[in-house]
Length: 342
Image 1 (cartoon, helix red, strand yellow):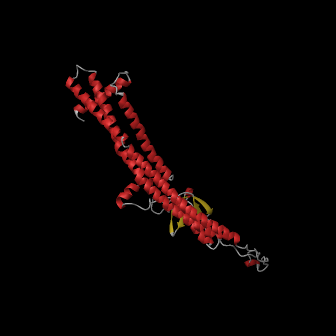
Image 2 (cartoon, rainbow, N blue to C red):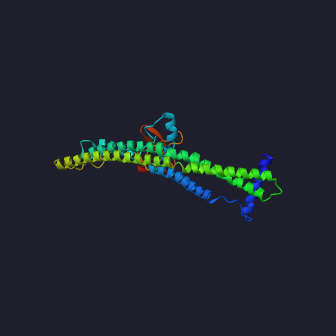
Image 3 (tube, rainbow, N blue to C red):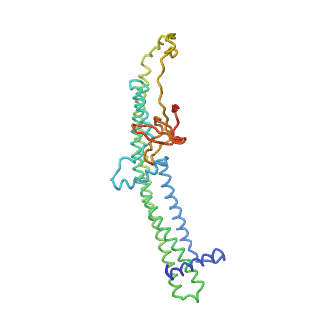
């Protein structure tokens, strides 16, 4: 730091101490400036808070919300994106319903209905993807630009204004010891910073037309999402009504129990009590949360998936198998269904 710069910092620090400790009066800014500063401060806080709350509204899941914030970078590299890069809860539910619906059998009323609703949920997930992308690009990103440029400019100019005020007040109170020309230059710089701060705050407050347009785009995206969601749900509702009518008109099947197997008093050495042994269930667990691998050898999974347990590494880790892959994962992310036999 130069000698002049060091002196300036000393002057400002001395003036700040005399105001805070000694109760010295500093140069007062006019009421119009204070009102402008108040409005700019409220607007700045609104922009920052709305950005955060909108992201939370779109994605309550923190991991998905972090990926949502990366959409802007992705869109610049690839152009318009069709998927935000993370699974929607509707899609995960839809995958589960369609899987088990087909396992039960689509000729079964419940199995067919599960497939119908599952396919509808997957369509809802696609519509939700579009909502996330539209809101991010047409509402969050423009507000983020305001936060990163206009609001930062205001903070910069206000900080500079306060520094120059302290410098001017220090020199003014030592008039006679400090040359008049130096005091005059200090006053000019103070007014210059005041003008710059006023201009930056005014620029922020004059963007209300753009901000209202962005809010309108946000509401239009929501409206489009709910219209499409309503159409999908109305379609599946009609299909389920048809299935209910079909199930009610179908004659009930009479249950006829099979003859009971008699107890086998045969060879005791090879007898297991007269009944065939049931199938052995393999060790498995159910994922309670999403787990994203961070290291080589770890096994990733989504909430609700069933994982085959291979072995227990220690008191905190399991080794498991899912979708043809084997890896390690923490045991506090899962609920054991069939324990590993020892």
